[in-house]
Length: 153
DNA sequence: GCCAACGTTGGC
DNA sequence: GCCAACGTTGGC
Image 1: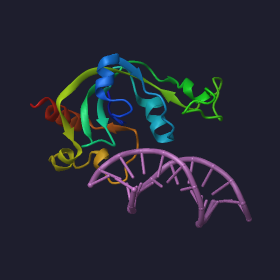
Image 2: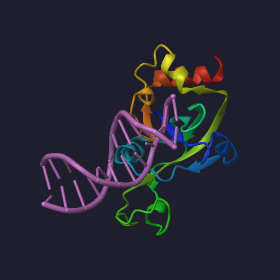
Image 3: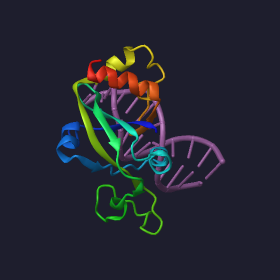
Image 4: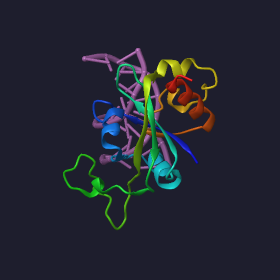
């Protein structure tokens, strides 16, 4: 079982939206490194930290889990779609998505600032300068620490 | 709104 | 294959 952090702008899709929908397809990943994580490593049951980016303040808003295997992202060949990519096709898919399911919204958001100041999280990727991946791996120990912070343990 | 960091594109 | 230009991300 692996653990991940996935970024979303809450103005676009928030943890509350996920709570309402129950599950959602993570469409629109158009970065090869993130694509490779999705396609090659994400498995049903993997734990997900749902991160709110571009918000006040940014931080981890709750927990989700992977609920589907990776499948081709069909928005890539929808002409006119925001995520349309003319270089892909159903025969040779270039981009993939997984679906995530809602697990829990934290009673209060774990702000980026707290992640930076929590001992044991020094190596967490999301606090690194210039780390812009929308999907990134999280060490099991880091996941546990952040989950405990979020749940108030 | 600013701007640093980074990925991608495309001319050569 | 190099690298400048450009677009995007995302914290501040």
